[in-house]
Length: 119
Image (cartoon, rainbow, N blue to C red; front, side, top):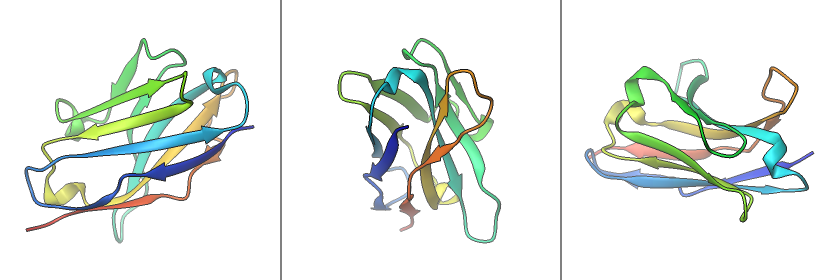
């Protein structure tokens, strides 16, 4: 089973950009659909985006379509989330998650990285 570590969060002004990274350790990274979720203060965790095993397909939550791009580099065992332009409502803890092929749930989670969008 993989283990996930996110990085790249921080404080950014509205209209700015950030790229989050999710580094996976362990074997068979290509056995996992990768996704990003987020949780804002006082709200439930919500789905942001997901990418298929070899990066051929991606899906997005409506509010981030056209602004966020999910990608993966299987040679580096890393998934990414490029975010721009950012809005204050994007402020949240962002989590990377992995769903193993043949399963229907995200069984592996990272520890999260804080993204704050504020002037």
